[in-house]
Every structure is written in structure tokens, then in C-alpha cells.
Image (tube, rainbow, N blue to C red; front, side, top):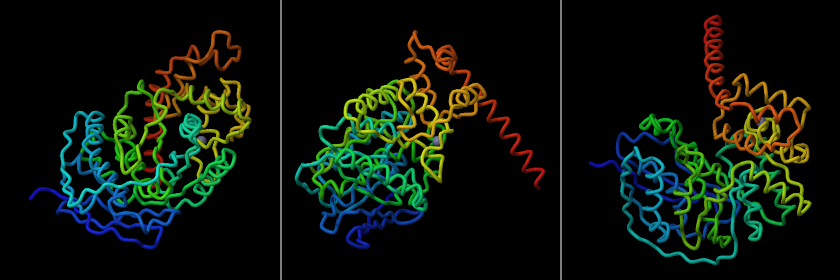
Length: 405
Ligand SMILES: [Zn+2]
């Protein structure tokens, strides 16, 4: 018998929380528990054909990549019609993998609702703030999601994330919508990715997070009348790495009256910083950026690669990082230079590109010593040095562990 997954039951834990029960053929041991999503809106009147979308947007890539058939009762018509195109998007990102899997559904239902709002997935970092400014005329609702970059257990980081979004919404006269879900952890990402280890190093960033994030918004797009949903790009066309968030995937996503947009793909990180700078100068609305994921106890750690790149990028635009939520220390130039030349940063998430964008934006008349140095520094050296640094560090850890034994 062919491999299959079946959506058995969609049930409400209360008026705000939906839980999904699935069954599957033997051998598909890819799930830890049922997936749930909790909203701050009452979702008890949402049709099942919309309510199933959060689950499907996290389940379907598994079916396509692993050639598994999916069975369910009801689906929204526009979502159903967009699926082949979304699958095609994944196929172009990962052309080495043959996408398979079919969806068998009993009823396809057309859903209509008011189109009065737009929404933006918001983290408070450079990408999403820049996307907000990009769509400022529509004044999108800000959607924050607990259970993704911020784990469900981390209340402290969630509080900071919520405060940043609330603060931003107050200054910009919009509203924050909170969602909580175990959508990242209900499945065994590592085990799924192992089937494709040559091309996919982690299921979440490489496949799940774009489509999976967007799908969570379906139920509230029905209650809030959302016509357009924006997800901020992390990269541009120039960054040629296979990534789970890609315009070829997200621009194809539709359901009910809602269209998803992979936003700001034409701007690199330095151009986004410039866009934020222009907005702050024009409106006088000061913005606090939250870019750091390495500081469990606070805001921006101001030491990691992401914090340092952002601070330097702001300084290149003659902006004061302190005003943007960074505790600036006078050693930032020295610190960055040391980390780059010693290879202490690992440049995941397109980090080296961010440095390259900074480098390319340094003008010939620049007087600051650090920027003159950076303009002439070969960034490939920083990447090479990182491998040497990493191997040394690994040897040191193995040695220490042996002594402990
Ligand atoms: Zn940091």
C-alpha cells in the first residue's frame, strides 16, 4: 500500500485553540504529538475548510518531499487550487528532489469574507520593520508567533518580543495579533531532513518556515478580513541558497480572499536599513529593532554576529545604534574586526552577504578607520578562517571532554 497521512479530526480545545489529529501508514514515524494553534481571536465559527490550513501548510511539504498521499474531508477552494503552484515553487528551489504525493479531498468549498485589512508577520527585526514601512499605507496588522524562533517554554523572550511589537504598534497606530503553536515541534524535523541530507541541513529553515508560518494566519484572515498577508524576505535574488522562505513558494499561496506576498525581495539588508533610516527621519517615530536570537535574558546582546552587523550597518548610515535598541560600546569596531579576522563568526543565514552589502556601500570619501579597513578586507578570508577556528575549537572541546572522563 502507498504511504499515506489522513487528517482524522479537527477539534476545539476551547474557543481559541484548535487541535489536529492525524493517522498515517506504518513507518512514517515523523511526528511527536498532535499539532495545535492558539489564537487571541475566537475561532469557533471558522469553517473547517479554512481551519485545516495551518495543519496542511506544515504537513504538505512532508507529503511532497517524501511522496506521501494525503487524505482529508474539506479544503478551501483557492487554497486547493494554489497547491500545485506551491509544490512547483518547492520543486524549483530543490530541483534535485522529485516532488510527489497527491491530495485526496472529499469536499472543495469556496469561502468569502470581507477584505478590509492586511497583515504582516512581525519579529521586530530589520526585515519585518522594513516590510512594514514598505506597506505603511495599508497599515498592516502585526502578527507575532510563539513557538517558532522563540520556543514555547521561553516566557522571558516572548515577553520581550510582545513588548517590542506592542510598542511598535502603538507608535504606528496598528494592532498586534498573537498566535501560539507547536507547529515547529510537533514533527521530527531532523528525521525528515535525514532523507535529504545532501541538500537539506535542517527542515525548519530549509523547508518548513515560510509556508508553515503563513498558513497559521488562515483562521484569523477570516475573522479580521485580511486580503493581503506579507512575509518579509530574508534574502534577495543575489543570495543563491535554497531556503524555506522564497518568492517562488510564498507568492503562490492563496486561500479565501487572502493572497500571500513574499515582500521586499528587491532590497538587501543595507538598503532595508536605509529605508528604516529614511522613515525615522521623515516621521520622527523612533524604532527599536530586535535582531538578536542569542540572548535568552534580554534584548540585543550587542556581541553576536547579527547584532554587530546591524550596529555597523546603522553606523555606516550615520545612525546612532543606541536609539535603535543597542547598548553601544566603544569597542564595536575592534570587536567586529577581531571576530572577522579570527573567523569567530559562522555566517549562517546569509551573514557574510550582510557584510558584503555594508562593504559595497562604503563611499570613497569615508574617513572612519574601520570602514576604510573593511573596504579593503577580503571577506572570503573571514569565511575560510571560520573553518580553521571551528576545527580548533572542536579539537579543544573533545580534549576537554576526554580529561573529564
Ligand atoms: Zn546578539
